[in-house]
Image (cartoon, rainbow, N blue to C red; front, top):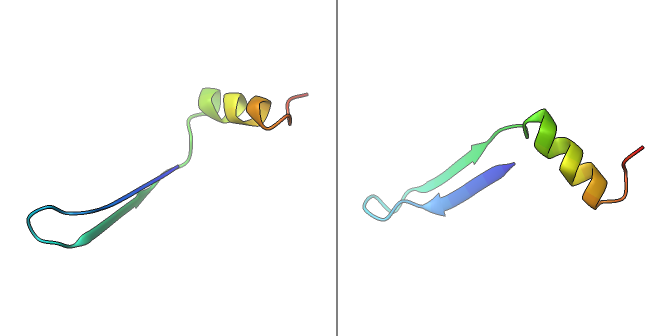
Length: 36
């Protein structure tokens, strides 16, 4: 998962990435039709 935005005061582009928690990764796989 990732989140990016421009900081409202500094104008700096902020970007954060992190893996999905296992339960959400399973839901995402199911939604893509990749569930087993």
